[in-house]
Image (cartoon, rainbow, N blue to C red; front, side):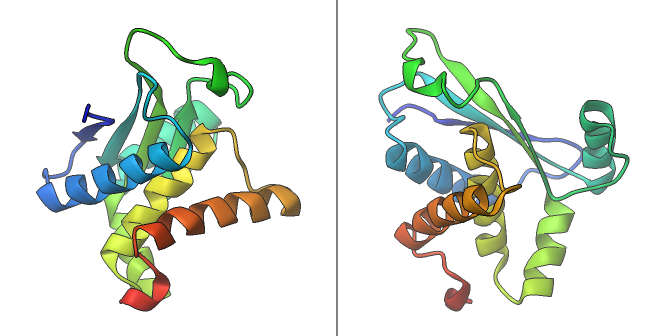
Amino acid sequence: MRNLTQIEFLDIEEDEEYSKIIEKVVEKCFEEENLLRTHLYLSVILTTPNQIQEMNNTYRKINKATDVLSFPMFEKEEIPNVINEIEEPLGDIVISIEKVKEQAEEYGHSFERELAYMVVHGFYHLMGYDHIELVDRTEMREKEETILKKLNITRGDE
């Protein structure tokens, strides 16, 4: 199988376990959304609160750290038509590993579950979903939970 994920560690130490979790989640996301036959891949950047705050300020004009940022390459309507011969990113997901650790502890579940959730959440933002309106939030949450359940990464597995 081709590599669906390009992972970068920015100002943090590389961790094989993080990579395994991310690759497993991305593969299931691509499978669920019928993207395995495309030439798309995801770029995932794992970083620090300072780096994610800087990116959030630069690209969104919000000067605060957050847990995950998504930078899509396509509009939602374009994705079904992207069947290129060359590999190109669906977009970039930036995740603050420190925030993942904090939130896992805060919500009382495993690091794996929180990191997997950040990846699937970022993926669905790249797919054009959002959580501003209730109907959209409900649809996005259902898709996220479907992926996590299929991977047997649930809140009850801690």
